[in-house]
Structures are given as C-alpha cells and as structure tokens.
Image 1: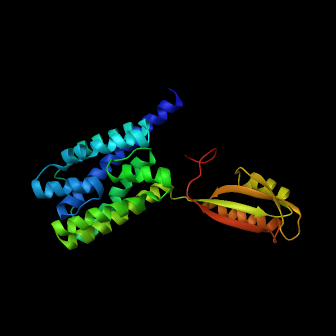
Image 2: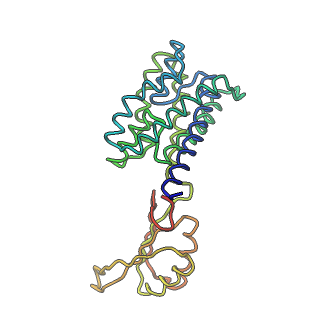
Image 3: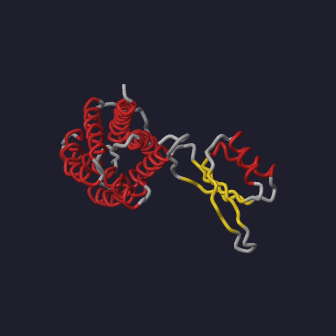
Length: 279
C-alpha cells in the first residue's frame, strides 16, 4: 500500500472518530441543557429548538453552499474530506440522538461539552478536513491571512450568539459562549500540538563546538546563518534550529556549558513541518 493512500485512510479514520466525539458532545451535553453550538451547527440547533427540525438534517442542507466555496478557495482534497466529516457528523447526530451524560449543572455541561466538542472538531481539522460551517470560513481566512483558527470562529460565533440571545434568553447565550470558548481553545491546542516548538538562534564565537554538541545530544537539524556584528564589524555564524519544549532545557545547558557568554534568542513557534517533525 502506498504511503499516501495509507495516510489518507488514517486521516479518514480520525475524521470519523472526531465526528463521533463532536456529535456526542452536542447530543449528550448541549441539547439536554438547551445550549447552542457555534456556527452552522448552532443555527441547525436553533432550528431544532424552534421548529423541531432534526439537527442532523439541517446541518447538511446549510453546509452545501459552504462546500462550493471550499472547493474553489481551499482545494478539492480538503473539500472531499470535509464532506466525509459532515456526513459522518450528521449520521452520528442521528445515531446518538437521545444520549444523555448525567450532568445536573449547566455550567459544568457547557465547560465539558465545549472541551469534548473541541477535541472532536480539532481532530478533524488536524487531519486536513472540517465539520463544515464556520470551520470552513475559519480555515479559508487562516490560509490567506494567517489568523488564529479558534479566534476567527469565536468572532463569527459572537454574531450568531447575539441573535440567539434575542430569540431565547441571555443566560443560554452566555453559557454557550463559555462552551464555544473552551471548544476553540481545545481546537487550537490540538491544531498546534501540546508539545509546542521553539526556534532558537544562538550567537557565539564557539558556534562550531556548540553545533557539534547539539547535533550529538539534541539530534536536531542545524542551519548556519551568515551574520555580521553591527558594532565590531566581525563576521559571525549564527546557529538556527527548531526544537520541542522538552528539548529546550537540554539545549540551553549545552550552550551555557560551552560558552557562558553566548547570546540566545528563544522564540515561540506555532508550527514546524519537515524531517523530524510531524506535519
């Protein structure tokens, strides 16, 4: 089996699993407490509360025009995988209808429902797909403007929740904001990874010795960058490397042991792709 085919199969399996987790959060925690989700799913839930139209049906109908935009602006592969996600979530919303997780406190339901929903949605987005709705809009904006996916979703959902506050009540809208905030944080955590990356730039006259030791002990790729001291005018070689947070302390110790006067610039890095790091 080709590597690309195998990766696609695993992505689809994760999308199916994420869709199931997402659907359980909606049916078992949100609906029993009359909470809303964000985006198109939230609109579909409002239709169910107001007119008894099943969420599993509305969510498919409302997402159809968004998939046309996704096909044109994001890509065929993403759109096809997203169609898998929305069909699975619709199916699981139907199959898990009536499931209830026994939680009496609505605030607890909002927090844990948001967490579970975010984990499910994050797993889908991590595998280059979406569950439709504002996920597609957020990914389009993120692709072209590099805005944070969770933040984009939160801004869009604020408009929808304002409408829901007028249609239902302010308390439900406020608790839904809590749920969506938690969900968006979970999405970002999964999207960016829990083991965040760091980019390190090291300036030292002992660059060769430091680089050799880092290659041996940290085992991360290193790039030399040509530089020049502005004050001294001396040519310098800067060490550039990307590491995980867990490797930061070891890297710092190696540099300080070899050259206590070395200059280190440690930068938070959202994503690293390439050899040695998962895409």
